[in-house]
Length: 377
Image (cartoon, rainbow, N blue to C red; front, side, top):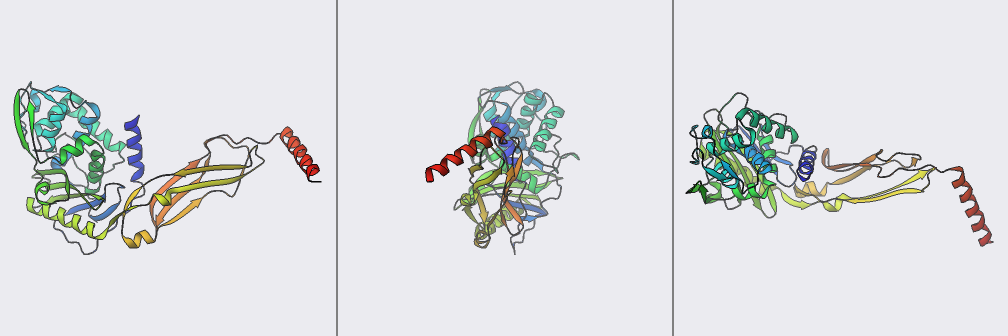
């Protein structure tokens, strides 16, 4: 249930996001995006909705399925089909028992294709079934330009995403503490079977850019160099994605550039004070005179000072309602916006049946009014 609620809230949070460009930012990578990790709002984009191969950024989705389907201390027997498939490997061997947590680190630090394959065989039974689970999760997250064909990211015609949708995958992945901790780890000793293996993180920004908090590198001949990089500065949490960079140096420099420019342009604002809703609607012919409800929510948003000054609230509720009305009937919508961009929107529905007055109610009301009049006299 908690996982379902998390997915619903995540999906709803991306429904009101509109791209904002950082003026003057120039990068070489053909596709890139920066989003606010807290809200999902786009703060910078360059061809962010262009479908491209994703290489080992794939392993963020593989990691999501691992933590959602396995206990971290669960021992997983490595299938022989998982080993020696080429590309980057962590070094697991057939029939070794490896904890789910160590498979997670093997995927996310040295980008082990073998650990991704071991995960897929354990959860899905085969690659096709696991890819189906990956695509199911992508659909649950509201992604429409993402398709998975394998758990590791080696090139395939049916394996692609966009910079924006990869940022959403990364944002969801970071909601899991185990993944967030792994992608921020520079190096770690893990146990594969009865062996201790030292793993190094391929994300050099963890060593060279002080605000970095993770996440994942990727490379194939078809995808070129790719990177998801998360960073935090002055309470502003960002996720950047660059796809298709010609060199490793370019991907890291571009990611740093768009992160730095975003930090210079935006600040983290708590807009919770705009999310206090008071509903007071008169009821015609109802047993109760008014329908009254209060509601409050919280949200952190990345905004410029000018944008913050332009925030306005609109609410669309009826002036009155007439009984009888059933519980669950739509009442209206509360919206927080900047110009034409919706930052927050919530629909409200009746939380109880509104009953109509009966003749007896009217009679009792008349008697009460009559006695009140006599007391005044």
